[in-house]
Each structure stands twice: as structure tokens, then as C-alpha cells.
Length: 76
Image (cartoon, rainbow, N blue to C red; front, side, top):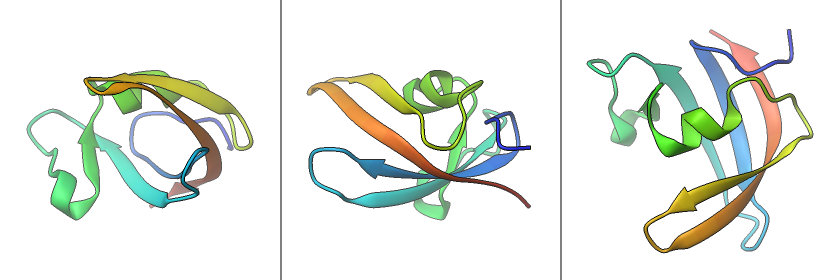
């Protein structure tokens, strides 16, 4: 499917800078940001779970809100 769920690999683009990043949503003990694996309880994961390709999401970060668009949802 194209809905973001636990285990999905998601490519996001920062709507301000056009920087792309890919993450896989994993359990807390598997999380390793350097390897592109983020915890299901992280702010980004919580914002994108349940969303679909093409959706825009707002993520609260320590430096303020950031907007991302979901470019791809892939299953490993």
C-alpha cells in the first residue's frame, strides 16, 4: 500500500530546502538515525504514520516546526 505504517521506508522532502531524506520506521531498540532507521515513537514517525504519498506533514522540532512532503512509501 501507499500508507505509512511501521516497517515502511519513507522518502521525505523538506518543503523549505528541498532536501530529501529516507527513513525506515522501526522499533525503539532498532533505531539508528545514521543508518536511516527512526523509532516509531520519534516526532517524524509519529507525524507521518497513517499518511500517504503526496501528503504534507508538519513536524514539531526543537528548532520550530518543519514541513515535509511524503515522496515515496516503500516496503522492504
